[in-house]
Image 1 (cartoon, rainbow, N blue to C red):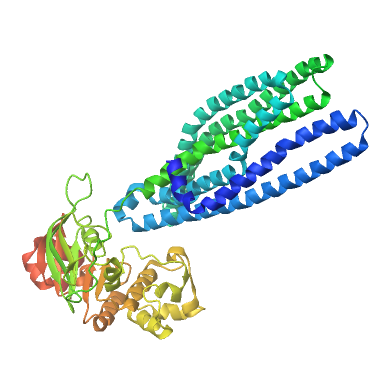
Image 2 (cartoon, helix red, strand yellow):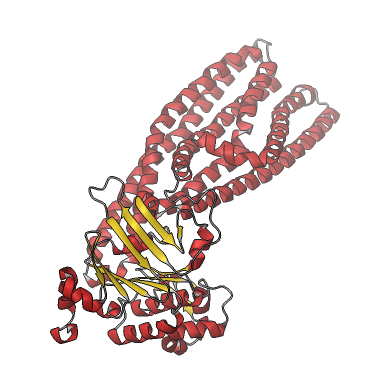
Length: 577
């Protein structure tokens, strides 16, 4: 997965990678040439007292050092630029894929996991790219070149290289094999911490209302401890690597000095050659150490790449049409034809054989007990999910054949949980209509019964809106969400229990203010409260996913026992009459 992911996303940056390889090659060659020059200074300059030779060769060493620094710096620059670009592309690809998911795919992965995959997982892959550019490319060049130069300096000690390098490689491999499962588990633990923290932040009011702070603190501590323990186990394995490298390096250096001294004593080797051989041995083992850092990063990056690829390879069940319809024969009309919907693996469908027609200028209300399928039914219209049988038609065309932008442009949707994006009141409402003027916004707020509290805000339309609208009450959020939909002036209004947080008086005034602006639009209202839908032109009663009643309020009270029970539970006998 890691190789495929990097191959696909590094392809646009081939020139930068080629520059990195060439620069690292030149820089490494320069670094390998320095010990040889140092050996010449010792053997031909210091030992003979030739100061001129020392100065000339020292000048060459300075020039070679300058080349090494320039090439290494340029390689790091291009490598960092490549890694940042790859990280940007990966985040963009994951974000676009996630935004194309239906509610089914989002529920499958879970919001905390998707956030971790978009941020932490991409960062790990991005870090691997930058470390590869700065270390991994240079490491094999340094290792092979160092072996060649070491043998060139003194072939009699080359057997020490043949022993130390494979020994170090075997030890590092054994440690790395045990690290992979720990890194995979660590990413899952990160997901767990994100999930618990996200739930506690979002539900802080519930936690405090039920005095659950100690329980939630313990729950977070459990998730945090699990992550810590996994990270400690992985850290212990990582901590073994550097001492292992240093042990092999130091033992090898002692062996070189031991056997090299004997060769110098016998006249088979010069002091400069021994110094150069030691330097090359250190460079060889340091290149293995650089490879070790990559070994530490590759397992975790591989796990992250698997998780990223899993998201990128997941196709949404809501697929855009290959040849979308961009013109509709009728306007402001929604029709359900024998619609059914079932979640994968569910024992029973959520909706069964639902058929009705919502026409312009008429209000269609949907009511039923909790779990009857009301929200699911409304979610099929904007294609948050697709029906598993039958067809949903908007303006005479199956929603699965409509151009998505055209479909969404026809709808004004107020979800069950009113969500406001951070910004100002004006910017939040202009998400419904970016070209709306301030006068248009005030008019929409007037209809939504929100003008009074917005005017009382110190900054009016410029007043800040926190993420999710948490600096407003539930009723205020609902009214702002309704104003956002009204500002759009759509052909079809979808209100998913959008009046539940309003008091009966505000509810009645809002519905009265909506009538003039929805005379040419189809209005679908999901509600729990009978008073909200009592004046609807058509009321559908859902029970266990089936339409068990259809008609006006007066007709259903007489003909539909489930509706009559709802009415009796909410209204007095006098109001019902």
